[in-house]
Length: 106
Length: 117
Image 1 (cartoon, each protein chain N blue to C red):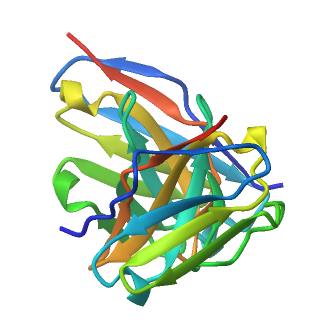
Image 2 (cartoon, rainbow over the protein chains, first blue to last red):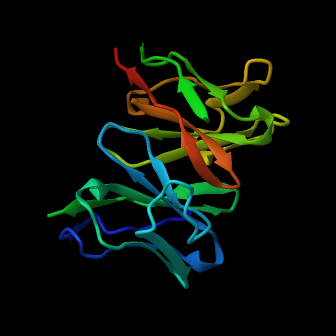
Image 3 (cartoon, rainbow over the protein chains, first blue to last red):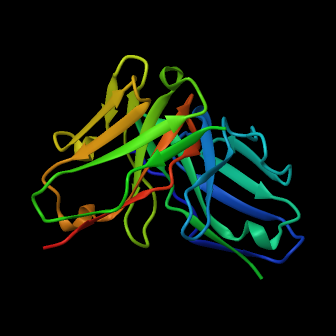
């Protein structure tokens, strides 16, 4: 079965840039989405179709996808961005989530 | 505004079944699919399956084939997910989400299902 691998944790200082990777075989040939989940809350879509932002998502969130890696970048990270982040893609008639990354804003 | 409101928490014994509802409002129900996702305590997200609210077509995760059934009632704009033969490792928060072309842009508040003897 298809697997998407993310780093378990990423730490970033306020105002700096956080990059979260998502690795999977030929992931660049598929569309990747990214979800933010804060403790006790439902996930929120922050990036779809590799790099598009839903309405209401701040411009500091951006995405890219090429080769075997999709990347979520948070520029000018704020304390409110501290959360778990999951990538997601579609493969062989099944949706797959990444393993999740906890972003800590120090 | 788009809202997905799920039914309340459930406690079930092993071997029992659970049926979770997800009532949609604020959009044309039949124009989108609904996916179901679950999250065990302290764990990541797991996709369970998808149903078209337009024609009822379904696509279930291989892991749950034979134990899960997803349905919709277009007269009430409600989606349902039934899971049978519950085990302790089915204890999780279950979410419904509106599928907008493979991206889930609106989520329900989640339903905690606890399986315990």
